[in-house]
Amino acid sequence: MADMTYLSKALRIADGARPRVLDIFSGAGGISLGFHAAGFRIAANLEIDAHAAATHGHNFHPGSPEHAVARDITETMPQQLADALGLGPVSEAFDVLVGGPPCQAYARVGRSKLREIAEHPEAFLHDHRASLFEKYLAYVTACQPLALLMENVPDIMNQRGVNVAEVMAEALDEAGYTVAYTLLNAAFYGVPQMRERMFLVAYRQELGQPVVFPKATHDIDLPIGYEGSRQVALKVLNVAGDLFGESTDHHYVDAPRTVQDPADAITTGEAIGDLPVITEHLTGEMSRGARRFDGPVMPYRKDVRPTPYVQLMRTWKGFETPGGVRDHAIRSLPRDYMIFRRMNPGDQYPEALKHAHDLFREKLMALEDEGRPIKQDSDLWHELRSSMIPPYDPGKFPNKWRKMEGDAPARTLLAHLGKDGYSHIHPDSAQARTISVREAARLQSFPDGFVFRGTMNPAFKQIGNAVPPLMSKAIAEKIMAAITAGAAHMVGAAEERVLVAQTA
Image (tube, rainbow, N blue to C red; front, side, top):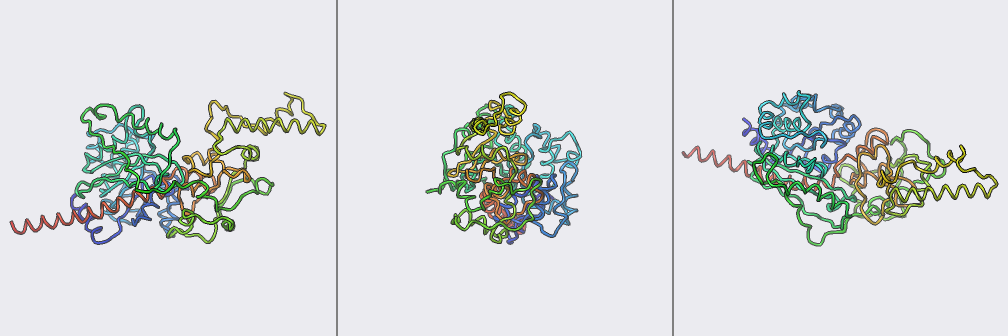
């Protein structure tokens, strides 16, 4: 029956139907958007965060509120999801499964555990002791996809000496998939951000297709820290034998080489330079409170010529914009504006703290010149000091702040953006601020017409959690080519078996 299900899906694709995607742990939809751009149909998603689920539903299924509902994988059976969306039998509803379980929730899953999941997938979905990885595998068993993509942080390859990516690959190999995983950096694929992630791709063995990752299209010399993180992630691959002592055949493959004559990596300045200048916070015109995105459209700068990357963000098919943006919102951080202004590109928290102390001393001197001296260590002195100097220990938080360089891609955006934006201070000192929601979206390669639901903080969190759509698109194009060719291979093989049977 399972073989017939896979063949049925191959027949659809061989006849020209768009492959149907289920995005698990979808977030706002970074992976979905890349697959959508590569020609896939986003059939459904599963996401526990209400704001992210609303964002995904609005962008991929506008007018269909059932697609904007937050759902918990620990409480949602695969068939329940299919029934809620009117998709019929879950084993027939999806061709491709994408997403990645949160890395902190993994358990060691060996071959024996996989067999249990294959035989009793709903038992693992009901079992509160099971990790999200096991629940994810239960969805694979129930949905029977022809292909799947999983993404996670590089550390997934070395969690206390355990290569969880290899655990995933072993499990999928046992389930009948051809599997490979690698580390890719988004800056090499046209994303204006240095974001290193593990990507795992698997195809049904019946497709007869090897896993091939896309060649890099852009080039940059990454900072030392990124190479160091990569080496830590890869260190476990040098350990003899696999996790279960059964083989030395790892599923890791080196990232493909760069295309001939690659373009330079997209810089922060190229990515966000056309967005409206924001200075209201410096003149006291910006109100406090939650930032919403229902205001008037803010027009693009007319004095900045759009770069090719900017043109792509403005004209992405299905997500075009009306000549400006509505979500160009920033945080109110009045203590820090003058510190931001003085910081140099590349400065981090130790430099920021030094600037703050300089500003404090200058303020004391100015008050003294005005005949209003403040006695050191007085209550007023401490009050003024706390209003000007951040309280963080530079030894514990050296990377908490960073002023971006306009002539380089941004450093990795994280979900912590939902709490503060100090890790990405705007490179333009005249604006003296952290980045806006739309600037963060641009640095992740979300087009300007992609709408984020919720207020500013939830939007920042959604963006920081996302897979860059351009990175996803590069992989999705390879998957599309593989399953299209594989579907034709499967159908041809089935027809040949029928002919052989008829002539026997």
